[in-house]
Image (cartoon, rainbow, N blue to C red):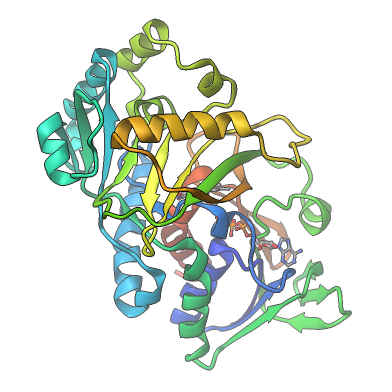
Length: 372
Ligand SMILES: Cc1cc2nc3c(=O)[nH]c(=O)nc-3n(C[C@H](O)[C@H](O)[C@H](O)COP(=O)(O)OP(=O)(O)OC[C@H]3O[C@@H](n4cnc5c(N)ncnc54)[C@H](O)[C@@H]3O)c2cc1C
């Protein structure tokens, strides 16, 4: 088959990966000169532990295997199996971790409960006050800013892959795609991966999709002068990831209100060290559109305070701040929206905050579904 893929983010690129793998010819369009949306703005966390039981966890587990396999072939994606520590600072947070550890699937998730000393043995940079930590050995990380070009360079070696940046798809049908230069790209199938761009072509093909958009604020520091051997999350992340739901979390919510700024911006702290030593730190979650076009300073101050408390030292100077937007499904029980929106055209978007993690498995499943 000749497959036209629209969207140069991680979903489009992973679909190109599997399509070429299966022997297809791929034409890949991106409206920008380089992908610059959610897929390069994220933490690069391959986050397995916190996933909801069922299809979400199974997809993340499969994706985690695939990231390791892809990295063996394309080391430039920067995958490392560094694991994560969710730092527990209060008795109610510890109770949530204990409840999760009691469940049958704790082992499959790579979870273990650590004392403060055990957590520091795993990550000596954690010098702040803590009661303990939930270790997830399966969590990993990739270098979001370089994953896409690294994968494309490998795809180009196949001789069956054509990358066309600066081309916005304006029409898509069973014959292929027409771009904003007036060029037609013929194909047997169109895979539309527009990310959070739900206007334009996506809306013309399918209105009223079960999707919403979410805006996050992020920052990155100058290099830290020591390694951060695991990624780090704070106790607020227990409120965010579905794996932690249960009576202990209900008690945490009822008895331990979050800092008002964290509540107002639906925040958690996630912290991952880049390969150059810098720390990527976030995040906030904003759901009300229209989204602010500017960055709000107060949440950043909160993130710095929490990160410095966990590390027990000042952070290096913040070098970059940015916001990013992703699309997520509003109906539960699905990892992504994968919908035939016209004859020969399949729309794939809405993986939410797990898109970087799950993209290899989502794309593998699409190709499998199309051609078992
Ligand atoms: C700040 C932030 C942090 C995150 N952290 C994580 C994380 O650590 N781990 C994790 O698993 N997930 C994370 N996510 C979620 C993850 O980044 C997204 O789910 C994922 O990147 C979505 O990929 P995508 O390819 O669907 O979308 P995008 O990356 O948005 O790519 C879509 C692309 O399509 C292009 N496009 C749109 N319309 C057209 C058109 N008509 N013609 C041509 N091109 C078009 C756009 O220009 C864009 O480049 C995070 C997201 C954000 C915003």
